[in-house]
Image (cartoon, rainbow, N blue to C red):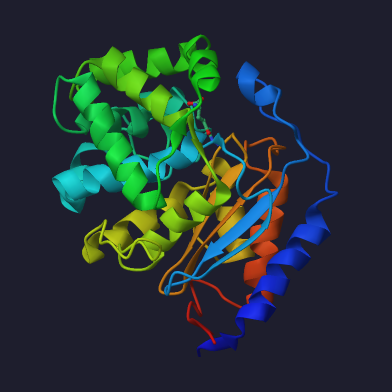
Length: 320
Ligand code: DON
């Protein structure tokens, strides 16, 4: 049954969520990447993009933060566009690992494929698959052009974050070379790792993430630019990846309580997809022990529960 709500009431709901959780101070900034540890942890933004291009923003929605693992969704979309959903399933997979995002154990357990492009191993493999093979600058251009179309405007590399990540990504170096050992890297492993590290270091606004979420929710057409970015048949496989592993080892708890497929990043961002209705994003730096933003997850869950939507029951919202 389709729910109806006015634009003003939906705007008020976002404001209400912001108000309700802005003083929620549990959790802590990611500290394993020095740049992230230093971000002002009071920042908090929520943004929503509707099918007709109307937007709703509350809080610090224009602040550029590190996209981090949310970038994995966009690269997964890119390789699904380049190779097709079936080939991505074959080369990477679509299963949850049930283990932390940077788990080496997960690769050892499933050495015939990295499991999903939404954990570090699969995302590094995904970067190795981006075309054209063998040319880092050209691959980076492909990634940037695609991210720009998904977000409706260009993300910007946060140079300090890139340097900070590159200087501390020893675990990811092991992952890249372990994947090479299992024949699961389709280009130079160091190049693939560098592209992954760079894409994680892109600065995006909450509104840009909401636009990317809306593009996935709305058959692959970005409502802000009105341009087709994804083939309509690719949005469901992509959303299924988000639903399966978007919150890592806490994904089941998240889906069970929120009813919306969403992907988090250690920069504090969350991208959430309500198929057919809208894209929603939230950002705040303090994370829980699994690396998911505390305020952003509370805000997204509150909004979706209040709307009475659930991807397993009712996804249709009509905004007058
Ligand atoms: O691979 C890493 O360590 C980071 N650059 C990205 C991790 C991340 O965002 C995990 N998500 N919650």
